[in-house]
Length: 220
Image 1: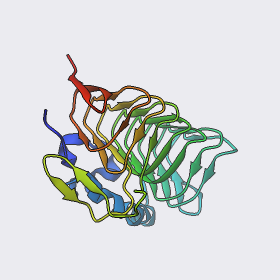
Image 2 (image 1 turned 180 degrees about the horizontal axis):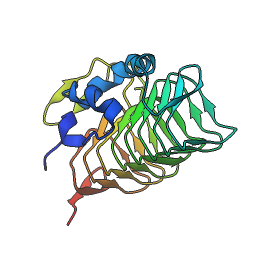
Image 3 (image 1 turned 120 degrees about the vertical axis):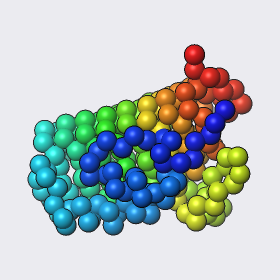
Image 4 (image 1 turned 30 degrees about the vertical axis):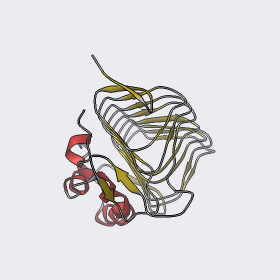
């Protein structure tokens, strides 16, 4: 099964203010160290149809934010996005349209493309989630190795990322079950589903069902 490691294999970036960033990065992990600077540049240049919510926090039309959510900039949220009670946005976050950032979900240095759902008790740090990606309740992107060493992506060969913090990359349509742990440097291909309570690492193919780390079947 093909293991996608290129940005173009994982995402169809239809979010206008993110297209330049995605097209400039051959591998998806190259996006991560650029997020903060890119967000500040977008804010400085101005975003058509967005308004300033607070210092370095900009929102599109019909963004719903509950009073108990905490948002630190730089952060950008596309139109129709909902940020639910207790959500904690720690900065360097760029979000597409019609996303759900759920109760007690924490985001940090990450990108969510359109229609992403992280609705219940999720941690998404140093990660990129593709269009319509979904994380079940309690699923997390683990972004730091216990030994503190740089993270290596394990595919057909090993790719040195040069990053000490790197969570997960979810291709368009990826669906992560409740309670899953995506270990540092995990990449999930387009339209692949992961069974609940699964801990995985490495690069997972597109259009598959991951029943366990050792049982991957092609979606029919």
